[in-house]
Amino acid sequence: MTSDVVIVGASAAGLATAEALRNKGYDGALTLVGDEPQAPYDRPPLSKQILSGAWEPERVRLRDEEAIAKLGANLRLGRRATGLDLAGRRVLLDGDDPVGFDALVIATGVTPRRLPGDELAGVHVLRTLDDALTLRTHLLGGPKVVVVGAGFLGAEVAAVARTMGLDVSLVDPLPVPMIRQVGEQIGKLVGQLHGDHGVAVHLGVGVSQFAEVAGRVVAVELADGTKLDADAVVVAVGSTPATDWLTGSGLPLGNGVECDAHCRAAPGVYAAGDVACWDNPHFGRRMRIEHRLNATEQGMTVAANLLGEERPFAPVPYFWSDQYDARIQAYGIFPDGADITVVHGSLDDRKFVAAYGHEGTVVGVLGWNSHRELRGLRQLVVDRAPYSGRQQP
Image 1 (cartoon, helix red, strand yellow):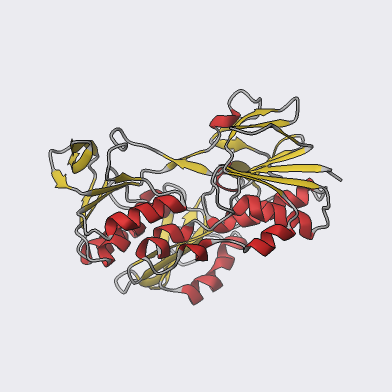
Image 2: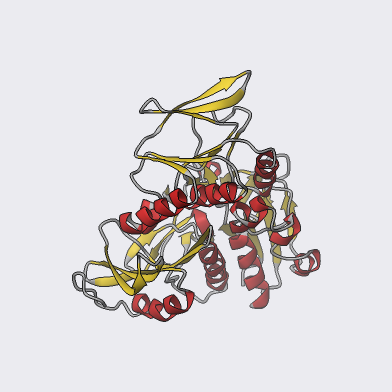
């Protein structure tokens, strides 16, 4: 059995790995490294319950102090990993001594993409708890808000800001919101949802620059010449795997840490969560998933494999998004060019389940305010049910 495990990333994936190791009987040394001073916390509520003020910050903690203490882990919080000496089996830390390991789990997640000018006062990104609290404080001042990026995060932030009664604009160079996540047909419904709630939606046009006065943003200028007054700007243009510290380590890096079907990147080295790119045997393709449930499930699988179980990680991914009165939930994958068939309800009623077909197989199902029906139809993805044209599977 491995005698010294180091987990870099005090994240949902990192915590899941640590807990699963202990639950499976691992009693060796365990170190958890995190670049934030806080113990592991949940990120999905940051753009919803924390930003809206529905939750106090303490509610996002994944475990209380007693549960964290029971892990018996050496916590290195507020310490950023700066390098990996793979041959010497050491993780290098900023402002601290290196940490040696027999086995390493990389769970460092992602970092937000930036735009030129986002260092101006009034411009925000949303990744950490501190980011969310800072943005909420700004929103309470009643600013005009421009959200740049209409993916999951941007759409959720726009919904919260509009629900607070603020003047909100949503900007994206793509033709419909969330097109990369749910496709064009459902993405159009998301755009209509925001328009119905009074958001000024600007699609198919990118940002030219942020206008500023004395170092503070005052407007967002679009590529078509439109100028949007703004006291608060939220940049939500995607993220990149947090792998800079692994450059030159010898690990395979591409769209994250490249792993096999067991989430193994090298002997004794695994990755879990948003940073991991692995071969999913269920879909027969390499994927990297930034979904909350995936982080937990992947961490648990990594723990099992560290202890010798050799278990392939073959999940049917699950994600959700809450916007206004809409709850969007989905199982599976949603590749470009997938065909869509409504198998329950109707798009017009905004209460439906849609099946996504790709290469003759149902690869995903998405529900809009249809939780119960969606759960039953998840089996189509699990069973790789046949999908033919636009006929109901």
